[in-house]
View (cartoon, one colour):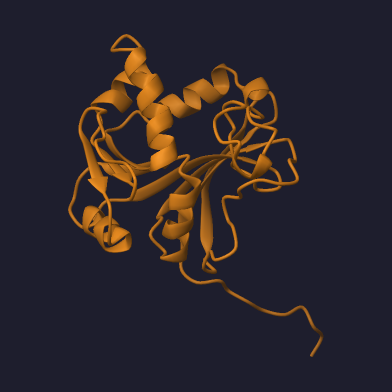
Length: 204
């Protein structure tokens, strides 16, 4: 069985909406799009290069798919990230998209949880999820994510779509790697590890 990995940029208060630009996702009146841009540096570029260095397939929601499909094919083979994304097999979850035109794209229109479980069953390259906030909520509610590669930025946004929103199942995680960029971005990788363990500090 292959891993399903969530790669997300998030603020200290858990917001993942529109890190890359004002028009990326202004839904619900979100006005702080592009909040991660000022923290980008070679350190984070190298991190992303490492995390996307091995073969992978993409699993994306419609909005992220359309943003990626409009951007990455324009950069071509000379850009190392673009070449990986453009050549990857892509699965896009959508009930409204009709003809996904980005190379190697397959549409998942119904029975989403069942279809994702089927994608995970065989051996093969890991499934990477980028952006795709609504899709991630489905993954979290159904315990489908095996690993989280988070970039936690030193900023609070107050409102916006959150990575771990209402409906996420309680889950134990294990920190397997962490480092901090020169600009204060925490890069942390967590793997799924069992149930939440509870206890008490009360004096018996």
